[in-house]
Length: 233
Image (cartoon, rainbow, N blue to C red; front, side, top):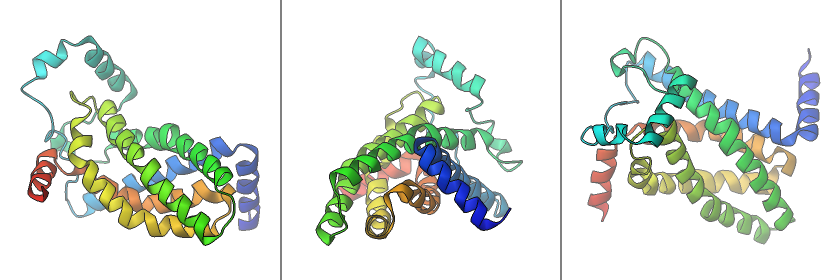
């Protein structure tokens, strides 16, 4: 099959089922970025996933008594979303983590971004510099904070962490600051040059690089993030 035929089919799919197309594309690039990150870690024998570093041992017995936590943990076990023993992290890929990124990309971030950019392009029409800057600022300072929050909380839920808010509170500021440095120039080009129908696809490609940064930020132990925040303040 020729490249032009493939591109034509992709364009047709994007027009017929834009929500499904954007969700699958975003989830694929998101998961691919995590796969690349794990491949790099395996090649250089460097762990980016200290699985047990942020576990709250002291409250373990109390948490186990909570029916909601037990139900969530059992569900995650059935779905294969819980990490295996950290001592086996170099024996193969962390498929549980890849599943978590696939779920987040396909079923949370993909649909959310599809609806967001559809609304944004309808509300701010045109490609004047004023419109592009307005979309850029709204995208970064209205969408990004809750999106980062949803990312950390949803990941903590799928990892069955006792307190799903700890990681978000510890890593939010650093992640948002980093996202501003990366996404502001990327989204400027997106809103200025990319057609609305390909908006999420462009973001998906850019997200491949961003997720590698995000994976590193997420793998950083909460204790280190807390120490850095205390130094800043």
